[in-house]
Every structure is written in structure tokens, then in C-alpha cells.
Length: 136
Image (cartoon, rainbow, N blue to C red; front, side, top):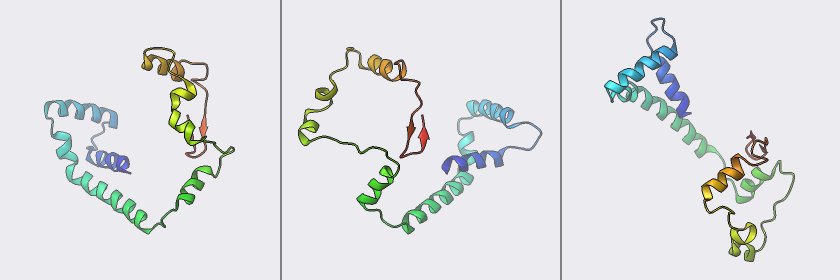
């Protein structure tokens, strides 16, 4: 990944003088404040090579893989699904969300969103997303 490439370039740039990574990063941050282009110049050539290698690998994989049909793509998300979703009829879609669930009860939408998603009864409930294999 690009992140791994940046980490590797940073590791290669660190002098092996007995200081730990944390101390070195703090010192580098101080130098970078005084010299804005320091990090860019330090990483430019090595990082370009690393990112180019990552992109070449990813593009080769993309070129070599079979083209997925719409059914294949849908099956990817449905393979572990326990239920089939029903999206309703065209009329339901045309009515929009306000018709289905109503307007937020609070004039301040951001406050209502925070209350519902971060401070509500189920805000801290663990949910597993089957299609991504991620627990949130």
C-alpha cells in the first residue's frame, strides 16, 4: 500500500544513532517547522519509486483479473447475507426519505444526527458488516 511505502521510506531515512523512532520523529517535526520543504525533499525520490511499485502491482492485478458482471458484484455482497433487502416500489423511492421516516425532530440537523448516532441507546452497540468483514 502507499501507507506502507511511506512508512518504509521513513524507516530508511532514520539515522541509526541510538535514538528511537519517536525521538527521531519529534526532532524531524521540529526541523520541518523551520524548513517547510524538508520532508518533501527527504522523501521525494524514494517515495516516488515506492508508490510507483505499489501502483504497478495494483494496475497489473486489475488488468489480469476477469471483468465482473453485475451479478458477480451483487453476489459478492450477498454471499454472507442472512436476509434479502426489499427496496420498495418506484413510488416509495420518489416520495423520498422524509415521507418514509419524517423530518428530524430537532431544527439543528447536526445536533439530531449526533444524538441519534453518538448518544442514543444503541450508539455503542457493536455491529458486524458481513460484506466488508468489519466490526464497528
